[in-house]
Length: 121
Image 1: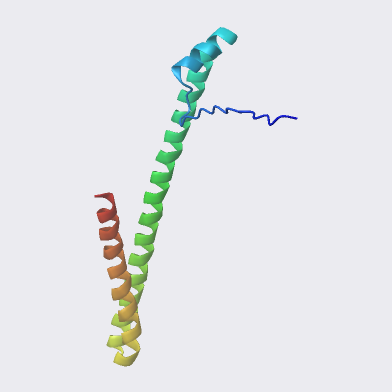
Image 2: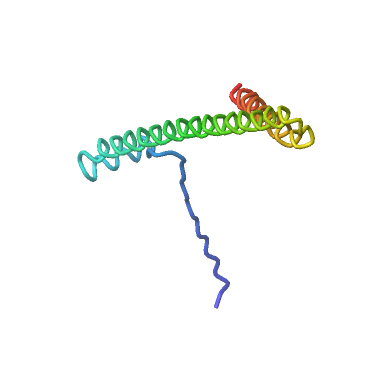
């Protein structure tokens, strides 16, 4: 046998995105009339769905941040109240822990707000 060599050529095409290329659109339309319109409608629906989900995610993130701020504020108020009551009863050693909790929770609220503002900028 003689040395036979065979050449194999592989052609691959890829694209990123929800829509095929213009040339492929025409092939789809020739193969199945109305297919191009259906593909466009599907891509538009998918994009709208994605935008709605992103909007919901942003709203829920904001709500969660507000809840955290409210709880931190409540913790600070309760701690400051305990601090005040313990000072009224002349127990300064007991008042140190609630004071630390109150100030750290208030600081966390403001630091969290600043870091969120910095991320948005």
